[in-house]
Image (tube, one colour):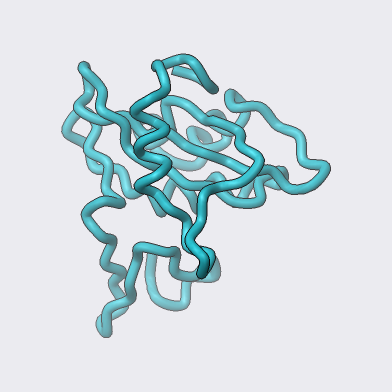
Length: 136
């Protein structure tokens, strides 16, 4: 993403003076040796008409090292399925960047200033059994 990107900077990303965006290490998921920027996947999920907001975190995976897992809140009246959201990401990004699972939630955990608490979501993702929510 470049500075001036219409989607704007995401939490966890900071614009550099040369136009590059630095993504914090916790926002990179390494799955099967491939790097997945959670902000890139979140941008695509957020572009779905039913999605209000999303957060993508890594969950330990025996085969791949880490697997991307998404937590998504829907807009009022929005209807979609985890499989549809995974397909939406796969249509716009490389197949390996799509989350393994999508969990639809009423709200994402946030700080008092409104920042999504990804550490809480990482704990929830680790506690979930693969395939328990969304798609494995």
